[in-house]
Image 1: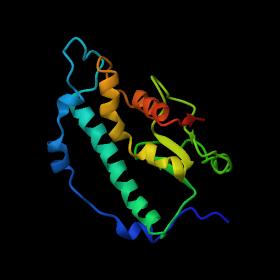
Image 2: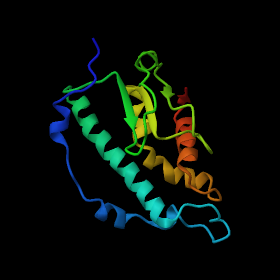
Image 3: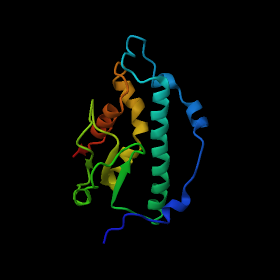
Image 4: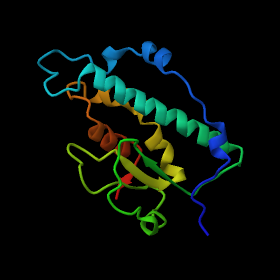
Length: 167
């Protein structure tokens, strides 16, 4: 029998303000292009929202990882669902349970310029690379300084960087 939720995990939820973290960022590392190169770039406000979302994802995953390290809750599979995502069909549980260690199940639509980042399922062994994508953003910027930051492109970059395959 598969267990989908661990009620004891939610007891440790922490609410933290991100203002201090956000003010510590050097935004020019993420948004330092000239006006000509910014064509099609996200607004600075939208970029801040995206960075905060990735930081929240990283913090939530850190809480789960702490429980995993202590053996409190050790899931085999994990599903990440962005808070603004719409599930238009049933979660493909049977497909998720067949995922190989380096496979990531993502929606088959709205890939735009890379890979849809609204939902992903994978084995726990690969989950860190999805949840810690914020760490890869500056590496992405170092390699592609002339490219605009787009969520779907950075997902594609992170998966390739860590040898994961979108399915």
